[in-house]
Length: 240
Image 1: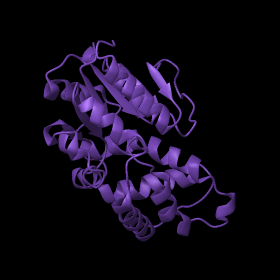
Image 2 (image 1 turned 60 degrees about the vertical axis):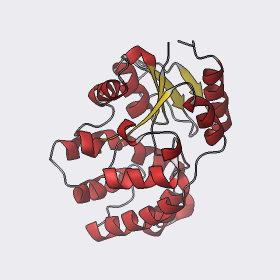
Image 3 (image 1 turned 90 degrees about the vertical axis):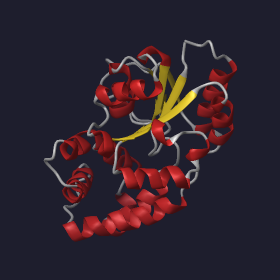
């Protein structure tokens, strides 16, 4: 029986593409030939290795910003960027994140879930930055601060199953009693399934499974489908 639903933040609770594009466009020549959707997917999927490097003390956050951005641009034979350019990207991106809002339908679903399930968040990133997004999205209406885990504060990063196990302890639940909602197959689906959780893949970018060994329990393609899935879960609390 599912007793808790835990969410990713970036590109799961809100549309990450608009602020990402606004920050990246000044660094890209011939931008009409550049695939920003693919760049966002590459950037998101760099997170697993990038935050693992930070958590292990091999990179500073500044080094991660440069390396992650260069790895993303290299996928489309662009770059590299200088540390100053990466800093400008980060600043513009951070400014754009001050204006984000929940995907349509999520607030309705969260209102229903709140009455029946424990709710939480697991997110890779600096704690201050991720909490600022959580507040901008007003997620504090549904999620207690104690049930928010960031990679920086825990010293763990998705897809490491230990960060999911840490949430088990926070929620005082078994792995089989928790479902995770995330957009990145490599970090969210893989990490959750390795930890023994249910995994709901919010695949609104039409990404491909990079490793078919980890099969999501549910897959939805847009925010209204996600709303329907979550409302169905709330309507049938005995779902397992």
